[in-house]
Length: 153
Picture 1 (tube, rainbow, N blue to C red):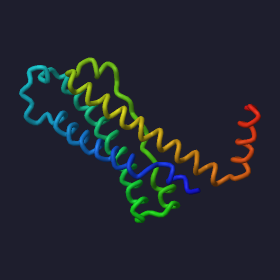
Picture 2: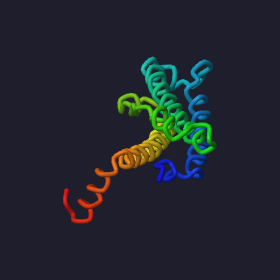
Picture 3: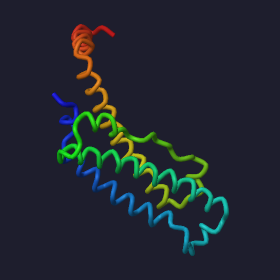
């Protein structure tokens, strides 16, 4: 069994659509070029917006890249080996609570939404990698199933 078939194409497509929407919302939320909001005038807030904006867009782009690789695999553009080699999810950089406290509620909500998206994608990535590892080591996989069956650690 190929590990990637455990992740359904429908889940990937739904997450991809959500990630695209969040990317567009992040672009709008963190565009400070014409900020007229008096709350955003303070330097601390502008710095927090810049830092968290970078973290947020990186988080979304990492999720999108992972999802695009999955889509390419499902469409036959990537082999399973290419997916294993190039389909890793970028590391999560969680938001800074001090920065979050300075941001408007709507922006904080958007950041949390991107963290949840990345968390879901990360769970899929871990599941896929653990299945790949089990498939790469059939003896270890069998030993693990025996240990599970007998309640051994």
